[in-house]
Amino acid sequence: MSVGEEVMTVEHSVWIGMLDVDGDCPVVGVNGPLRPDHQMARLLIRTHLAPIGYVLVPAAPAESLSQRARIAAEASLAAELSRHLSCEDDLSREDGPAGPVNGLACPLRQVVSSGVGVSVVVCSRERPGDLETCLSAMRRIRYEPMEILVVDNAPTSDTTRKLVEAMACDDPRIRYATEPARGLSAARNHGLEQAHYDIVAFTDDDTVADPNWPGALSAVFASEPGVVCVTGLVASTSLTTRSERYFEARYASPEPFQPCRYDENSRPGTLYPYTAGMFGRGANFALRRSGMTAIGGFDPRLGAGSTGLGGEDLDMFLRVILAGGSIQYEPSALIWHRHRPDEIALSEQLYAYGHGLGAYVAKHLHDRRLFAALISHGARHGWSLVRQMRHASAASQLGSRGSLLAADELRGMVAGAARYWVSRWRRRSYPSCQP
Image (cartoon, rainbow, N blue to C red):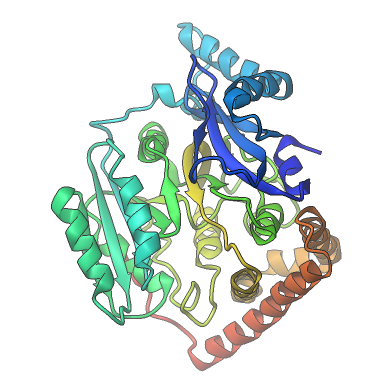
């Protein structure tokens, strides 16, 4: 069992923190201070600001948490720490190897100001509390030049507009836009159209961006002209409830701390490049707008608030690869995400995720490569999906209720595929929203 998986096996509340092992920095809480009910602490370990891995240690006593976390990191992440330092030694030599994966893995080598312009797009709909937290974190970012564009999607009140305008008074980088057509894809297309810079980074309103986030994203684009999309690490801000731990176990990346490049020549699996979720997550990615001529905008039939309820990010990643572009996963581009804390909200989210996945598959099922792969390997991949759901249920201690959540997701897949095919039959083509 990996260090990242251990946290989901504990019964009690898990506190989330971060520790930079360089120097004598203490552990920093991600979502508030330690509480008496926190039994364990899951800590993201970084060196040179680069995420290396997780360690899980008892939360008490708080006075020795930093020391115990360092000892745990030196023991369980020794190879990862050594690998990062070795890359740095190689890059310091004039004849050392160069390349985006090794060089960009160290944020200390990335530009933090006066770099490539970045437009950050945050799409939101009637969630002012989450949005205020998200924007407050954005205001701590010192990267330049950067703008923060909030797209208010199909608003039913002026709450979001007033919040954004108030925060913009203290930070002129923040500006407001509205998209009357409901749906996340419509909002993201509007963000692409209104962005001032060529690099457009997307995140959700229930996230907290690391101060180095835009610098890590722009560093990849600046060094690799062929990269059209960059994705990054999405880490949980809380594992307090069983629902949060279920989501984390269900959607955790198998190798979240390894930079990786994907293009049309990559062959990591039989379903590639159709494997959902391989490239990254919709809460943390950026696009090079000038490289999207052959790709187009987000499909308005996919995404939250649309017929598909989700899947617009999966569809975009796939179309980047099919159009001959490349995607770079860079873990130093870090975003913290707040999972759904209760089972009702989680059930709704998993149904929507399954619905989006079903719609995504239905959209691309006409491709002979996907159809052939599903016929020859579908049963094996289906069983792998079932195993992931069972693992999430066991790891979160939800028991039989975990099976109900898995059923919600599976029901969503079937419904999503059916609804997408119906919408496609009714409307043979959709107006692509070009950036």
